[in-house]
Image (cartoon, rainbow, N blue to C red; front, top):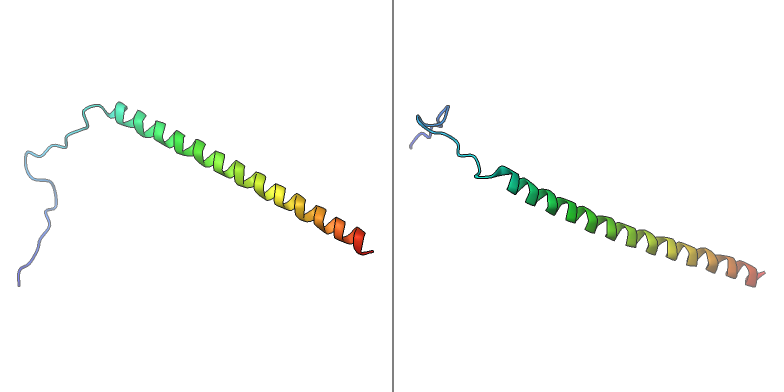
Length: 70
């Protein structure tokens, strides 16, 4: 059976390489985030209108039934 050990730190001489241009990546991700937010807002607004419309129809149907049944 072999024992696996983990290094407590990075190897000697190791340096993390930063992205070439972090701002370009940030701007791309930020634009994608905003686009997803706008799409989500549009879907929520459409669903809200559908719920309001169905509620209005249900109330109108209940009122009509109440008036005609009496």
